[in-house]
Image (tube, rainbow over all chains, first blue to last red; front, top):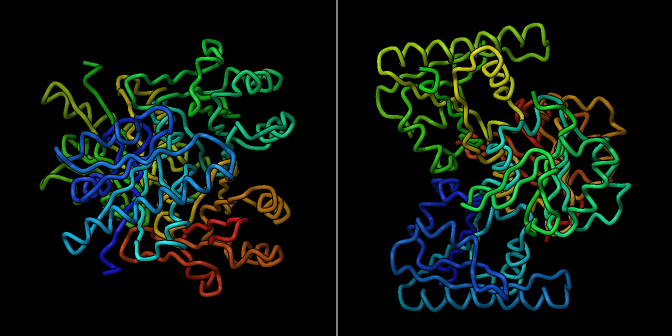
Length: 247
Length: 247
């Protein structure tokens, strides 16, 4: 029975439902159950909102609430509980039908940030009967560049991708912006004010592209930071800072 | 008539035709003409091979030969000729039908390396009647990680993406591998031997993921470099070097 439990992590992209891959769309249409991670507090899943147009009516959906924290003593039990729930649901379906295929939907790409890598690690260690594969997705920074018509890199250029939230050191951020042709700062929501002053000191504040909710109706993609209030930037907003002036 | 000339750059992903986005698939189905960049010497286009399943039979396809060189004095005239051809074909179609929509297909994503950003720059400067938009695609390194089940980054980790061909300085490469949780080395084909000795000196040669032709029938995705001959690595092969041991 063990090969009969199958989980596909599907990157749904950052916002526009049509940014999912054809393979991802097919997996969503075929799967027995959709696993949708969501925040503990808000009972909604952005990934599910994006995936919704591709689900058959009446399709079984299991929400997976995950805490928004960096505290490993809270995260690790949540990852274990999530993996256990995924395995239990697949086993329940397989008991009826002989096999079960679940789709675990993830914003952007499943292995580029996000928690799926942790869930997978627990599945491999504690629920090895569940076979896992991954359908890649378009990361948010790639979609943001497409919306803005901003080249991310050409020929010999170098790109650094850094979660801004965790970059305690302004000096280090300044060093990255000096050393790389393109710096992508993820999760700038809570630190936008501080990041803005670093960029201002380097004289590149006008060269930053700000992107939030890319591809969703509430999308904001803006060149320069003059019009952006730090307090309005959501957690998952990002900046792309290019050394080269965009022609 | 000027708004009637429309070009959509479509990222077709790195190999598997099903890695194209749903939006990209739709644009390929609807466009009047497909523009497919190819090398000057080989008269074939990898992007076209990937896009082929989504084209209507008899669909007009224009190959765009581009030189494989770093010599700007050869590249710039080629970019101008390519942009002029795109504009001329769209004008010819619009003269008959009143409007023309072309799809310019690109391996991976249109604005993440590759030449499309240069072609677009020429179009904007010399053929401003052509309206351009971009459908993002899955970059090769994202797909390689999905195939290998290798996390690219989690939570606070930092990623550097560097075309290996242009990294003349071994010391600098070693510095990147020490400073970043994940280093993606693109275009390792011609320099794999040298890169391997840098990785060996740092003791991380077993931690490198090698990927070539990801998603195509001739795909090779291999953990470690022991089995890889430098001379067999194609130009577009890549390495992903993770600091953290994958569990």
